[in-house]
Image (tube, rainbow, N blue to C red; front, side, top):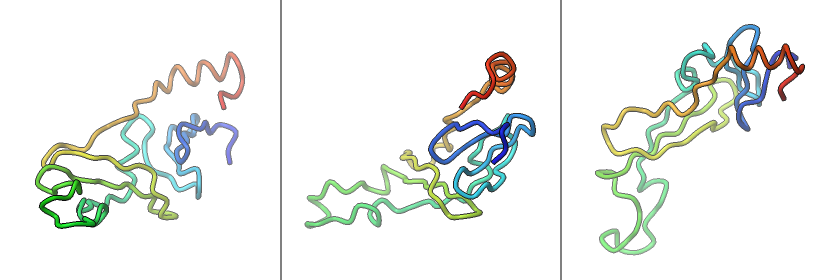
Length: 116
């Protein structure tokens, strides 16, 4: 692992010099760190009935209804690690949940040394 890589989440890190997202498990390059890391991941749109199988008659179950809930899983294309999952209403755009101030992180690294 490069010393210029900083941990962002359990499964994501950023190479500050190259300004690239990487998988922390396998090191796979996931794209431009000034953009959304999810663009570099594999997307699996899951049927919530598959994830939460009804244990009783579906009419009386609390299992999510696909007309109301969509489960999206994001996996690393290098190792298959599930990096993120989100629940969205059908038709809702995918959520950009992380936006990093790279310039601030670089300045902090210069002032204090490694951020991690």
